[in-house]
Each structure stands twice: as C-alpha cells, then as structure tokens.
Length: 168
Image 1 (cartoon, one colour):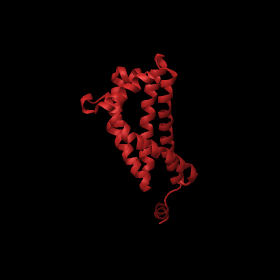
Image 2: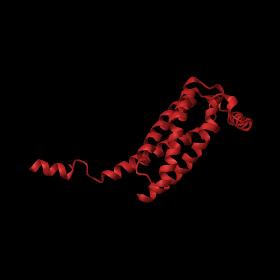
Image 3: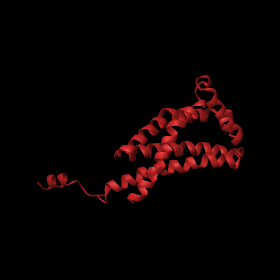
C-alpha cells in the first residue's frame, strides 16, 4: 500500500506544481482583467481556445467564472501548500488533498455536465477536461486512503485511558 501512495503522491506532486503556475497565469484570465497579463500569455490562451474549440473559455459563462474564482481563492493556495506538504512529508497532506479533490470533482461535474449535455464540446476538448476529473478523484482517494490507514482497524475500540476510567 505504501508504494501505491508514493506513486499517487508523485503524480499529484506534478499536477499540484503545474497548477500552482497555470491557475493564476492561464485560468485567471477568465476572471481577472486582461490587461494585467503579458501579451504572450494572452496569445497563448487565445491559441488554446481556437485550437481546442473551448467554447466555455471563449464565452465565459457566469458559472465558469465562479468556478475560476473558487480555483484562484481556494485551489491555487492548496496547490502550493500541497507541493510543500509532499516535499516535507507533512501528515496533514491527506486532509488538504481530500479537500482539493472534493472541490475539483464538484467543479468538473458541473463543467463536464455542461459540455456533454450541450453537445457543443468536441472529443478533442473533452480529452483536455476529463483528466481533471480523474486527478480530482485521485486526490480525493489519496486523502481517504491515508485516513483509513490511520485508523488501523481500531473502529469501535475506545482509547485505553477511557477504558481504565470506566473500570475505576
């Protein structure tokens, strides 16, 4: 089980490190003023929208702008914290990973529901978005796996100190 967690941590580390850069520089362009970004980043974002036909990034519907604000205010700081937690081997990484995963899965359910339900998304565009749902599930499961390992089969058992007080 330890090897699986290490592999998951490696995948999540790469993802969190990437998102620590991408979230404010690329995704932030959907909700922040465009004139704060250098021209090459704006051009890169336009190229992506045209190349993959990302109609959501082009149209900027209100629900997506709200999800981007969630990403910038919650998920971006968590990405940075999670990079540190993995590198430093912090025990609270499972909790922050679970919070991150739950938020991403929820956001991606809304985005993929819109894309699939509207029929506007090409298969090429879906191949960009679907892996984020997978990463969200992976981060959520990583948090849950660590939580189940901590319990160590002690479900239903009382701490020894409570058991001694009961007898006295």
